[in-house]
Image (cartoon, rainbow, N blue to C red; front, side):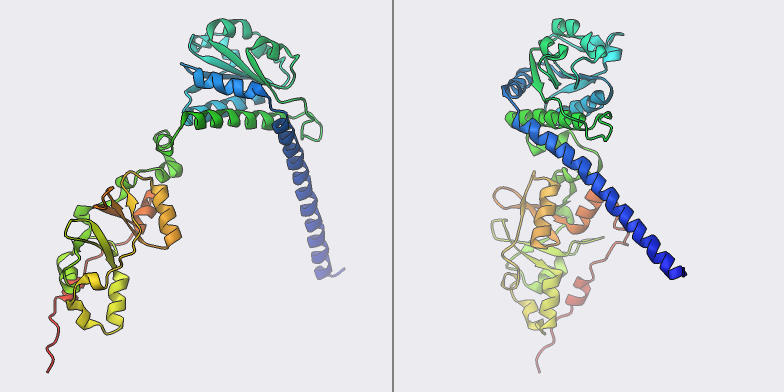
Length: 364
């Protein structure tokens, strides 16, 4: 067999292996999707009662679970806390060694156990029912010790695990996590939890930076190029220079100080390309862009990104409710804000004033 034939044979075997493994993955996902569909279809009033209990809670939601259910519980406690419902996780093994002191009379406890018979969880029931204002559970069977021992139990039903051996928690934990997400997000929605509140709880990382206020990242007026719309192009370009790195746009205001338009470096280039030197001494309002997109003070950086992307613009003025400019968001500022990196470029000097300060040639 030649080397080329062996290579083709090996490639064919690898492709067959890839196809087989991909199909195995799809089988697992299909199994878990089927379980989620079943849980969704069988959801009852116990879900709404649990949401109401969470909304009425004057303290914290204490989430408790063991093993894989405990890992789901930690994620659920984090999701609740980040979406407006104070919460923390209680490890059942640590609870019996003093951590029950975390549970107060205004708290409710949410217990997770697929079987409903997890020993470490069950033995906490008497104490939790005494200490907390209410107890909830996510479990499989109505007749389980856990379901019978709490105020409200959300039943997810008994389902085969996606694991080929039907042993490793997979479909069961997926169902628990999905129901937990539904509890947290429905409660958040009912509270009227806002994007601004979400931003306060997520100040770090890429997500946190996207949720920054535009006022935090915009270039304030002192660092912006701004002029009156009745000045000439030449006057504007000469007198609005700023030291250091500049934006590619000049904000132009009317007699009342409201934003009337923008004049960009691209506008200047187009003017010069069409031999419009005579236009340099006419009012800039005649050549400025009037139909401009702005963003209100207080909006999120993510909103600014969406606007700049959809409109394909590089500069976005930040304005008050009566359209008075407060600053400008430049695309380079967005990159720095989102990625936390420097532009790495040497500060530019505004050379336009030096070029345009030359008076137009007198006609002979």
